[in-house]
Image (cartoon, rainbow, N blue to C red; front, top):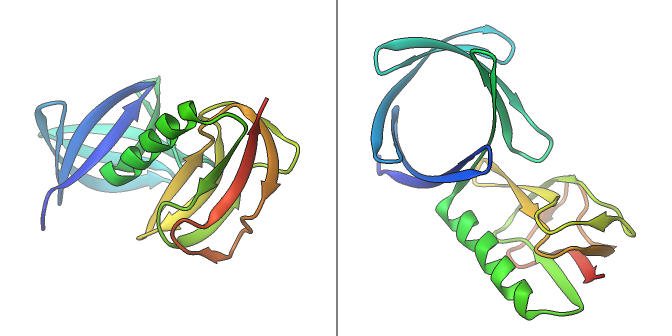
Length: 171
């Protein structure tokens, strides 16, 4: 299996990581991770570099995760390098746009959840659609602050790459 490059965001800080089976390289350090057992729904015993830890993991509606370890809360988001580049491209493109912008499907997939409705006010970075592609859920964000003009995405429907999911007009 080849190393997969991912971007991990923890409490607003981004890190590059590489994953290969149960080995994770994060911020230049290697971690051997093994799930020992699920103690209760969402509560796991993990072995990380010969140390056993217990974590509670909750998947949020937008596809991100809330992880609690030793009473500390970590808001996390994990995306592939491709999705991170697409997000960055959308934001950079948006800076050049005035008026309207479309949130498009970065790849073919299944619309899992539509998080906005027509007329909603959104801020740049707000999650608008959850798209499942290649067995991963991807939260697509609004690249601008504005008002949702039109929602084309429908939960449970498949979409092609570059399909317009949501149109947003700047305020």
